[in-house]
Length: 288
Image 1 (cartoon, rainbow, N blue to C red):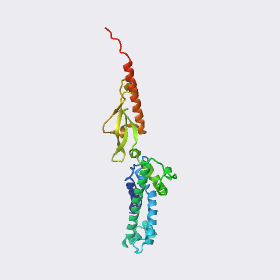
Image 2: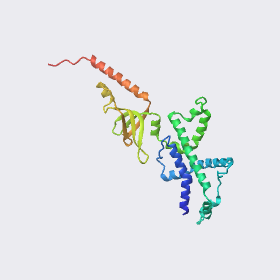
Image 3: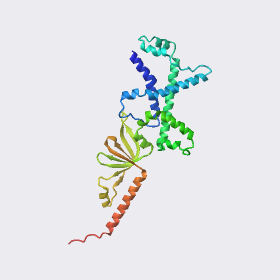
Image 4: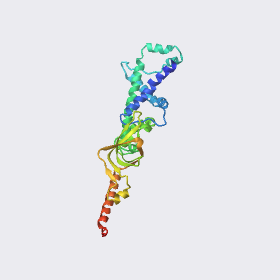
């Protein structure tokens, strides 16, 4: 009974706030589960970030209780008799506390969950702006880099409090979609595609199932030299979009969008030179 009650307290006061925080962070950025993190580690790892929400909730309610003339806000305080009753098989102090009315605990939980929700939404918006602008925090701390220098200083301090719990969970594929990244994608069957990473599809477990490229182009199975010798380009433009299974991808090479423009220009110049050479070369003499 004691173990069950302690587990329920851990879930309500420590695990649920972190879940709410992550849920509202995912309103802006996509989070994935760490590869080397077990479910148990993720469960108990929620205690540390949730403790920050408890500190904020405690201070918030303390200030609100001092400014409340109607005495509606309950001043939070630790009742050590209730804590000690967890070691009592009869839970005498806990039962007495419940019978007097859990209004203070409900109010505290509402404040705790509200703080976790707002913290998640604010952190997600800060992280998304940093990702879309492709800028590190040093840019916003540099004098003259932004007009809201003080606001960004406060935002980055806030971000630093939770970054260690979230930053490694941000999906790299999400960063590619948010920054409109162009990439070469080579499959295990040795086909090479090029396009902008538009979106990705996830499995029920949260892993990446496939990546969708828009404005796709595909290299020929023949080498570029063979294609150019025949007077044809090695690249074929595909219509619409193309989805590539993540399990079939051998490697991804992220490049700038102007890279392909230079490559196609070079191929076009080589094809024109090849065709001019073919026109200048006289045909072989006929054999009778």
